[in-house]
Image (cartoon, rainbow, N blue to C red; front, top):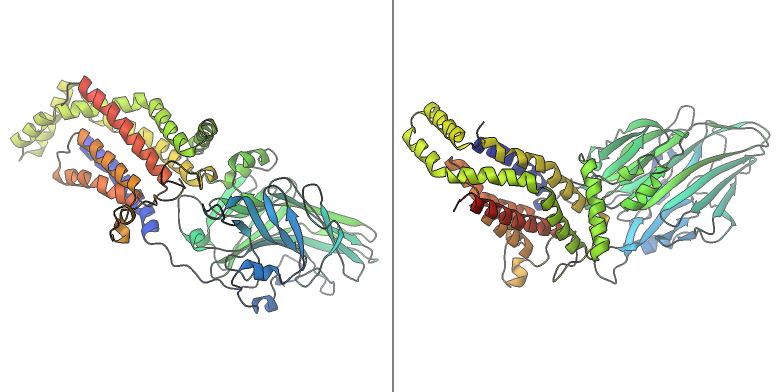
Length: 559
């Protein structure tokens, strides 16, 4: 395969991938209407079937216009630390209000905090709860109607754990002893004291229910959906692949979660905790994961305790790394992708530069320069080969004209010219292939990093994680079709790509030449809806590449 064929092959692969990504930006899925499903714990062997959490009367409630109206319906236990604020609904002991106070919903300084957990019957319901199952149909167990009493404390903070108590009137006293750290991790101890006069066998369970938003349902480079580490292995399922009939998994230790781009809610199990995990779609765009632990046999006069953790918070990579010292592979809640060995170091380098410079935009530009410097030897070989190819371009065209009716002779003459001029046609493509993992790894970092969300740059760029807001219609004050209304930075990027292509040898094949001529335009509109931080990186990278390529061309006497 000659140089032109190789280049066309690699370009086709990259363009195909970009078309798939671009479709999601230009043709987003229609937003689904919120529903009010029942949340059901599927039966374990020997336990009650169809244990309901969100019962029929809850489904009959109207869909409230906002969360505040829903929160006023029940008695609540406030929770607060430096990272979260919210409440636990005492009716059913449900974790259904968690606000991430360090993060705002928009770049407006008066914007409310990010709302992670929200009550049932709201537009983006997301909540967690715990309970017990039993094979004894006559045994009264806590359910959605259970109004838990505060045994101590009136506010959950890192300094003040709380205890919720309920007595079933049959000799069993149920307790939740709940504590939290200074970040996003709750510890929940389910305790049962047996004074019934006989042995009782119970199965602990927990469930997380989530109504996926329009953004959650869209395919993107960052995984969104079910994320778990089961028996030490990562398991990921996007929302649209979660089936109504559901599927089950088993694990000892590990964790299970519903994960969004920047936030997630997870059950975290102790290393010796064995659980059966069930995952299903319970209504349109509404999903549930639940677990059932091992059966606990409680002698009369004895007390049984079961400990699990609930994580409800942000995907702060450095924080998750600290948790991962005790929680198996907890850092994999962040979707680092196939090139984990590159993506994660890239994040730490970028974060160090941000701490050094105090601005994420400048950190991205400095990282682009440092990365270009690190790849200098590889890029040099590629540009050296391109320069030599450009220098002999007139001779290649002459050979093509001479043997235009004899492809075999044309190929032999071309290869003889390469041998005589000491040119390796593949030398320019192989370094490009080596750089592909680097390219996608950095792309991944810029897409998934919470640290880039709402990070400002200079001028009109107030959020590096969003598309360029200064579009043609805004700065030119003219009407432009939405598909063509792109920002300033994508236009600059397209110009740099056009100029860079002008430095490369022109493909001999006319079809390939036309395709390469259109590439700057295609890429410009394709990337226009990507995060502007990514566009800024690519623009500077193109400029540095042009400078390096031009120096090598001058060195080789190429005009």
